[in-house]
Length: 417
Ligand code: FAD
Ligand code: PYC
Image (cartoon, rainbow, N blue to C red; front, side, top):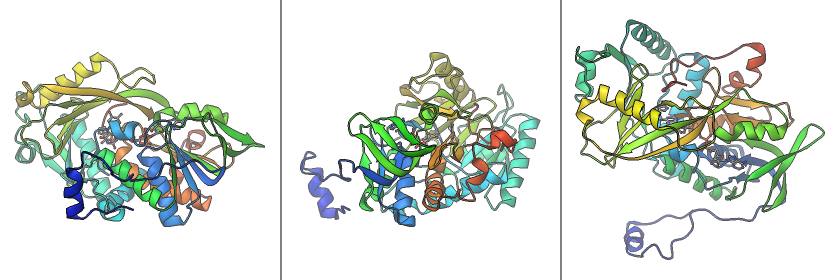
């Protein structure tokens, strides 16, 4: 692992990026691993990191078809919170929140986790009843939360239109002070560097084209570059591409793939030092440390694998943001992009065994998996290492759609889907 002293940093800042050492190796894959993780996003990399670091399973490869963290991990708006309604989900996301709180120290890499708080606004009586119920449930689970009225919100976010003349006046909000944002690519790089340092092989630009299944058991993956790579266990962590991988395994997952867009503005002076979300007006915003407004709303309604999305959603998103923040009306937008999210009918993930022995999936995080990155990786790693699903993962088996034990988190999902 490479460490720079203050002097080293200064020297490299004048080096025109020459002679920098790689932060992780670029290995040729072995013929066989104990565990192959398909997908080098935050969740796959976190799984590999915890497998090696915490569970001593170091003969691991992460196989990524593009570059590490280039999927939804690089495309999301980085909101981290744990204020979910049902015990099963709340425990899982709070497990993640606790890991976030020590993550920069654990990885020795600054993931810029900033606990600046998150407001989920209510605009109707029903919104407020739902908010009160969710905050009460959170507090019973030991998760921080408060119900605020419009006056208290205005004190936290002076630029939010809390007037009675708004089309959908703000009636109140849930407030989670420990929520916040993090630097998404740093999260991927921190986990990648940590996994590599523990001996994990990170194989980029290599698509898994098929799963090798013998007698109902997965025994490896097929790639164009390196042929067959064998493994005792395979964990698929491929977000919007999960249905494609499941098809290779010969089964279907209860998932739909949709584009989800984000937009960032030109940088402006600090004006918004918390996260504001409204499921009713249907938009959310925060401000990055660089000064850009980071903005988004709900999924594009159609299914697809194109990482862009439709103009109508952009317009709708901006309308919602201006409804909430008229003060932003002359801010120019800089960039827009989309990711492909894997939405599950109950708005909860699938962390699961499958009909194929030794083949596991971790997916279905839809619009809200960034916040789960460390927790998801941790419980998935434990499950793969022990060959038995971690207690926090058990409620999220794909087989809940057979027995009906769904965990409906549509109300707490940040954006509609
Ligand atoms: P990814 O980062 O997508 O990683 C999956 C990887 O698998 C990709 O790199 C892909 O290239 C690779 N892959 C796919 N198929 C193959 C194959 N056949 N072979 C090899 N590799 C393959 N969540 C929040 O909590 N807060 C937010 O504010 C938030 N905002 C969002 C905003 C947008 C616009 C989007 C798109 C998503 C947002 N999310 C948010 C959701 C969040 O981004 C995802 O749930 C999370 O990043 C998923 O991480 P992952 O590692 O599972 O997936
Ligand atoms: O899950 O909090 C969330 C979220 C915000 C924006 C997209 N997802």
